[in-house]
Structure formats: C-alpha cells, structure tokens
Length: 475
Ligand code: ARG
Ligand code: ZN
Image 1 (cartoon, rainbow, N blue to C red):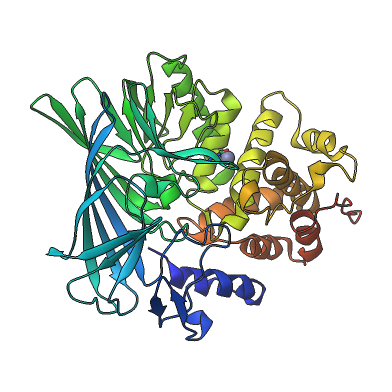
Image 2 (image 1 turned 90 degrees about the vertical axis):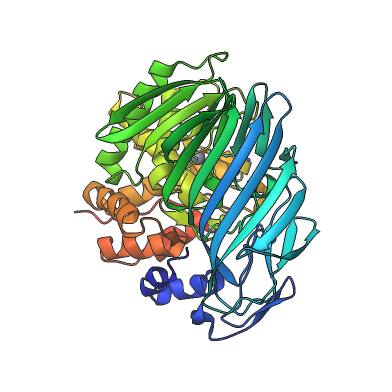
C-alpha cells in the first residue's frame, strides 16, 4: 500500500526533488533501476539511505496474514506468513527481507516456488513469472527459534524472547527477524495475526481482537490491524498478562501488564486515556480503531509506539505514555518516507511532552526551550543534523528528540499559537495514513503562515550549529 497517487498529487516544486528520490514512481521518468538482479521498468527503486537492504523493488504489499504458533517454554515458533501483494512490474523473481527461522517451503499463488537466502535477502522464483499489475500471494512456512538483532548503535530489537514468552519490537528494521517482509518504511499494509499459545498464556498484537478459540490445551487469538501500518510498527506480545478492556472517548482500549513486573494496570489505563484525550484535543481525531498499552519485562530500556498499542519496558511514567500515544498521530499514521526524517516522529512526540507539561503545571514549552537553548554554541548538543542525523544516530536524544522539539517551539513562536496549533491538526489530518518528508511540513506551514519559512527550516534542521533566534516583526 503506497498511496502514491495521494503523495504525488500533494507534491509541489518545493517537495519534488525530495520525492523523486523517495518515491518509486513514474515521477522518475521511466528511469530503470537494477537491484537484487531485478530490473524495475516502472521507475528507479530508491532504497532507504540509512537501511538500503530493507525494502524491495517491483511490488507493493497489501496485507500480511501471520499465523504464529509459539511455545514460551522452548521459545519455539511454527509459522506461516501469507503476503498479498501487487506486482508493479513483470517479475520473474522478487525479494523479501527475512532473517528468521528456517524456511520449509514457499508457495506463490498456491504453487511451489524456488527460493534462495542470501544474508537478509530472500529471493523467490515463482513457478510462473508474475505479470505487472497482477495481485499475488506468497505463503512462507517456517519454524525454529527466532531471536533479536543486537546492533552496536541501535541496541536490541526485533523478536525478543522473554522469561514467559516474547515481544516483537521492530523499529527500525527488525521485522525480518520474525516474518518475511517488504521492510520498506513506505510500504504500509494491513495485518492479521493468528497467534496460538499454551493455555494460560496470553497473546496480544496491534489492533483489535477478533476471536479467541481453545483446542487441545492451546488458545488461538486472532488480532487485526485494519489501517495501513508500516512494518516497523507491527507487534506481538506473548506471556502472562493481566488484561483490561475499556473504552476511551468511544475507542476500545486494551491494556495489559505482566503480573510479575512492577506494572500497574490501573495507572496504565488512566495514563493512556488521559494521553488519548490530550491528543484528540491538540492533534485531531485519533487515527486507529483501538488503543491501549502493554507493560512487560523486556530488558531493552525503551518504549515503542507500536501501532494502536505501545509497548513499555517496565512501568511507564505519564510523559512516556504521552510520548508514545502522540506517536500514533505523528509517526504511525503520518510516517516518514525515509529514516532520515525520523525527527518528524521524535521531535513531534517530544514536543507533545512539552505541551503536556505546559498544561499540567510544569514548565511551559517556551521555558523548556530556553533551558536547552542556553547550551553554548560549540557544545556537542548542536552536532548532527536533526533532519539527517545518520543511520547510527536516528535515536540520538539531543539531535533528534530535543532539537526536533526545539524547532517546533521556534516554529510556534514564529507562526503564533493559532497558526501553529492549526498546523498540528492539518499535518495529522492531511497526511493521515500517508508518508511524508520534511518538505511537506514546510509546505503545510508556509500555506498556513502565508510566507517563506525556508531559512527557519534550514538552520534548525539541516545545520550542525546553534541557530540564531528568528527576529519577529513587531505587531
Ligand atoms: N521510537 C522509540 C521512542 O519512542 C524509540 C525506539 C528505540 N529503538 C531502538 N532500537 N533503540 O522513543
Ligand atoms: Zn519516540
């Protein structure tokens, strides 16, 4: 699901250069790209600049159906993944991203297909070449013991086994540790998860639970995410959980905590509800069909904004819940086109924390800005470009989270409160379920402000020096 039409329709000259590099489409004027031995005749496929091996040319995934049978005692997984996709080119073969347990067989449209694994690339050769425009299904059967990635710069992520189960936290490119995937941040798809676990164990995932069945001492829960979701936001959580179901503002709310941890179900419920209400007030209508949160003992030391239901490693404080819930609008629904623009996630979610504090007796966002702005020029705080920090620094707290939020505060001061808060709504509404770049934000801001904001965007997002404050015209 690429929603290319919407993206390109929204492009004006200012964004064109970025989008030509970012969107594999006719906009590239029929240029051909060769990747993994596959020629793309539709347009050059542009891999992500930070994760060039994640994502694959030639097709567009519509839906993932993941059937997962997991036994916590042994951490053994028996799985079938069925992917529904559309060929965007004639495909004698295609690739998926995969580095999970051993594959037993692959079928394309029900016929056995040849395949080869080479590092994290899985090449599939269907019995008959796929014609451009054709919708096809790939079924992959695999089994074994999945495990996480441990990256020197990004930490532990992907499929993470726990004492009593497992949690999948994919950001940024960990989805391939547990299912074959087109791990391109732009290729959003819907998901069905069918998770079978021993009785007494609970399985949760994104979205809404459709059914639960018991047979032969095992329980199968089916979960569905019916809104477009980028693969880095797909999640399952398996283990002993205390689960609570309620609603917040009419939205089903499913929260769960590991009873052996320090999580407090009531606090998770209250904090989530307050964060959703706050988000709906400032950012507009909540974008998904359900919400919630999961607290487990994982040992990664971060929370993740998994779509519709964030996962917390241990009991979250209020601000962490505000941060992860804000990501549902900024990151999950409105998603960067490339990982270079991760500040569009983290800057907005951090700014949401500042706004929350401002409204709850804490420092105002302007005061938080001032405190950080006192950091002297030349301090490493100002190093790295907020809108292009580099692959190893996508989670850099100062450059991406704090300076991203500082830019938004400076934008607020420049636009004034009414225009800035209109922008927060417009950004979430206009690009709902879409993929965006920094230039799209500039365009939306300039449309609302009625003037050029180029220098402001440039100095805050694309330089490594402490920006001078914008002189405001007196009014
Ligand atoms: N996006 C998460 C947040 O809201 C951080 C994820 C960190 N991931 C990692 N692999 N280190 O802050
Ligand atoms: Zn975040």
